[in-house]
Length: 509
Image (cartoon, rainbow, N blue to C red; front, side):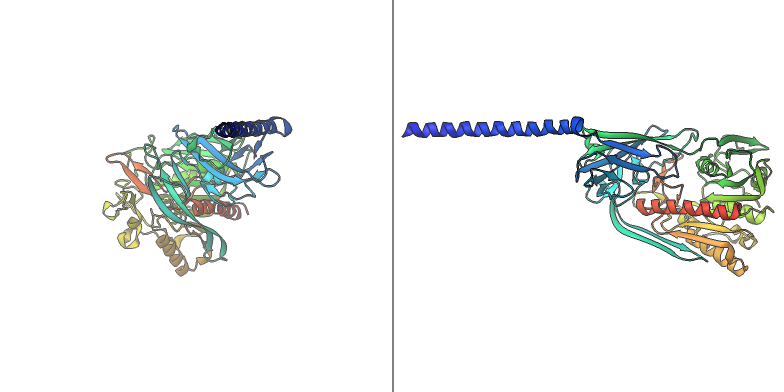
């Protein structure tokens, strides 16, 4: 009896071993079958981007094909900026019954963004190790934002548009040792951003270093269209860069002014030229070719008037079709040029900036003692990031800093980010609106107000810089600009479309 039991146990053991071996063989067969499916039975997965070369304000269509139906996949975008830092975004999708994924049709279910966002892989880019994504992600250090993906567009003096979408809870994560708080800005405007877009099996994170890349495509994002000419201007003390569209002209034109961060940003002017407008990006402080102390605004009213006239008198520019655009402190300068210099711009575009002077002047013109505003009105959040919003509050401004806004004679559009932490833009809008109404000129004013958008409303698909490095000397300082990723992206796309329409109506017709 004992012998029989031993034989039975031996038989059972053999059966278990055989079953285990058969299961392993079956698993191996399935794995080999998958490889054969990829290599023989069907075409290999294909990822396409169309157009593969485009201007940065143009959307592109990203599609994956020849994938298993109803399967989880991850799309990842990566680029190296000119500083050498890696930026990335990723999103989780599920393929359709026909084995395709299409970003213009399908909804992301996780990653850097949620929902149907055809350009989410671009505006969702973050410095590697710093990501904003669904709250399901874990992190060591985090900031939680409740993000309402709503585009509530208020146009003062015109109709009100609403395009409400879904709410999203997002979380911003940081990995130790990563340089974060960068702002993606193109320096060499004559080269492109090269974006590597890849398709991965399963719902994965780039930090997991997945082993199998199913397909990939490279997209080029340009600021200068073919034929656009870039001309450095160093003439009669004026420092700038002129961009001219292809052809002989005559072209409508824009004078392009940025904030007290200084230098000479060129990418917005390059985009204007790519859309048929001559544009002069003007430096006015913190540039090596300008006179005087680096951190002071040492050029006066005559400098800005001369720059406007230089653009106006260019042989390829239509002299009576020149507008001005300003962001941040550039808004004050835009309004100052239009109200005090005796020039007549055809239109004004103001993006989140003060309607009053926030810096200490050295005389009666635009020169200042220092680029810093009054430190007594600086505020700091719990992480030590500085905001300058209180500086531009009207009750903190001396009366002599106000402009004669009633002198405005051309259409003015103000782009307002309601989460602007850097400027009291709402007060500026109210001041402009009330002044023009009292002067019987309310018909000249239009305001586009965007909930969830921050201070730096830039060309579409630009990643949000909610905070960034402001300076390193005499002490390192981080500045908070505001904005939440998804609504800020929506605001940039809509604002850019409205800016182009505004320019079309006032500079071409």
